[in-house]
Image (cartoon, rainbow, N blue to C red; front, side, top):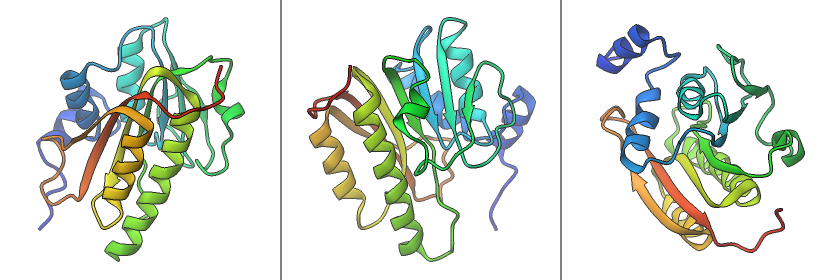
Length: 197
């Protein structure tokens, strides 16, 4: 039986975060140190908002946080929130006068159907959209951190990331449930030719 109210669920509730998923990002940031004070961060698939909360804390008053989700965000303090589908939101919508992002996060996941192949393909489509936005909007040494569901097309997506970025690693947080097929791609330093200022 799936244990929904685990240690991380209780910890998130006690610490005032919107969801247990915050500890996946926190663990990654403690390992790689990629979210810092003053940074501009884009959070794709932000709802209910635990990653966004953590990012706002990390970037501080001089940072900028843009969050995108088709669903509402619980806490919009310190955030520019765009309630749109990631497939409908434009680069111009996202930019908000920001020259380039230091970090682009994607914790996006499809509404699961129970059919693993279908869910995996939908996950890949979300990841590809996040990658497209990252190549266009990241600063030269910026970081793309993206959740993906493991499956037959994951290796191809990781190869595409390796072609687009100088450094690519796979990361499985301890706070990720043992039965989960999710894994995270950490990519730094866009190498792909692009037309960004």
